[in-house]
Amino acid sequence: MNIQWYPGHMAKTRRQMEKDLGEVDALIELADARIVRASRNPDLDSLAEGKPRLLVLSRADLADPLRTSQWREVIPGLIECVCHKPGAEKTIVPAIRRILSDKISKYALKGQSGRALRLMVTGIPNVGKSTLINTLARRKAAKAENRPGVTRERQWFPVDNGLMLMDTPGLLWPKFEDPAVGMLLAFTGAVRDEIIDLESLAAELCVCLARLYPQLFQERYKIIPSGQGHEILEAIARKRGFLISGGECDSERASRTVLDEFRSGKLGRISLEVPGEEPIVQKGGHIKQ
Image 1 (cartoon, rainbow, N blue to C red):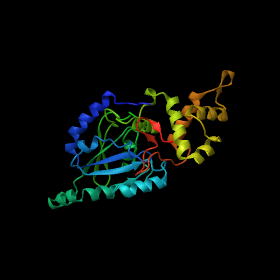
Image 2 (cartoon, one colour):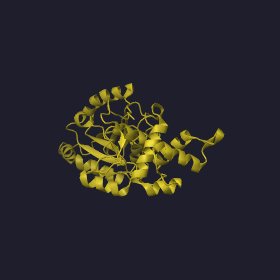
Image 3 (spheres, rainbow, N blue to C red):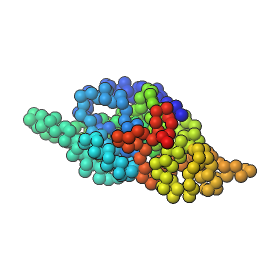
């Protein structure tokens, strides 16, 4: 599968971000704990060059805790977070103050110790930016839904502890050079389902999950996964009773079920990337055997 998604509003978002970076002291970059490499926009290094950046792994409650701990070892200053749960401010706010300690000291010397710190919250679509802002602000300030493309314009939100946070639309990059990246982003819901062949996507996900977490997969679907992805989907459909006229398997319903249950964590805590190892989905979009 060669998945590409870069609608016009993202090009507009990128241009606006270039203008807005002059207004902020630092960035909070959110990445998905299940696909840490694939969910980091490579363009951000050049866009935000010179700005302090705090990397926060969202969806930490859905990711394999062992894999997340491995990522913490290789990425200094990494913070893991469950964006919708209270308590995120206990780690994120002190971390912000650490990376901006020099600026805070300069403000204090100028008699501006109460001056608000301004941060841009950025990341791929549907990674939890608005949800994190709502948690830090302790109110439903930013519109948040579990689908990509909800936030379309930048918005400023005041937060306790002298912080101002700018919510930004989810931003991908113009072309995924490696098809594996597009597939991993689609697995987690960062790409609109409407542009994808969901049965093919779910079939690929079945192969990934059966390869990485066979016990969790077997416990959830009560089958021993074997064969090609579409064959696994058919086995799931029969086990769940997803049948249509003539006893034919409803592969579409099985596909949506597998994707929804992976994304919501019903299969268990799963990570699809491991630091220092080749991704399960390799270059060309092939599943590692």
